[in-house]
Length: 181
Image (cartoon, rainbow, N blue to C red; front, side):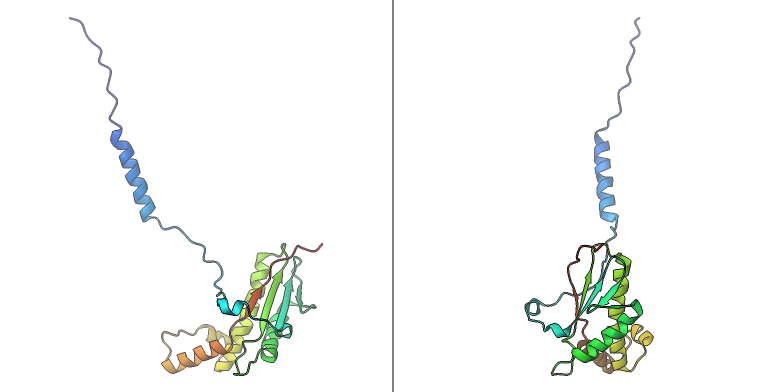
């Protein structure tokens, strides 16, 4: 009697590809992908983009690569940005209806400007608008920033929305220029 050597048969791998495909689909559907939020800024409506702007209603702020600030060509420190923006909006921004919509703050940077310095400048400009709104509501800046409109009375919500419309943040960003040596 002759003994035959049986070679082991390989396992059936036909369903392995199906299982791997199902696992891939499961992980794609169940995984949440983190999304960058970016800066929350609202673009102006299309009809306003083509309106002519009086140059005396624009406050130009330049932040160069060395973190030097120039407001309309004059060198200032970071602590002077907020009061100067507030004064400019109150002086140049009032329209016929009593709203401060005519003042535009134009921000320009160099290509080498640190991003953190730009964000600090943008925060100062926005804080100036928030201080104006808080003063119009008769609140401190801290209380203004802690307002929860869901819990506020309808009368306060209406006053809040009126003040928001009275002091809209008109911030323009110019294209960065090449860094100066």
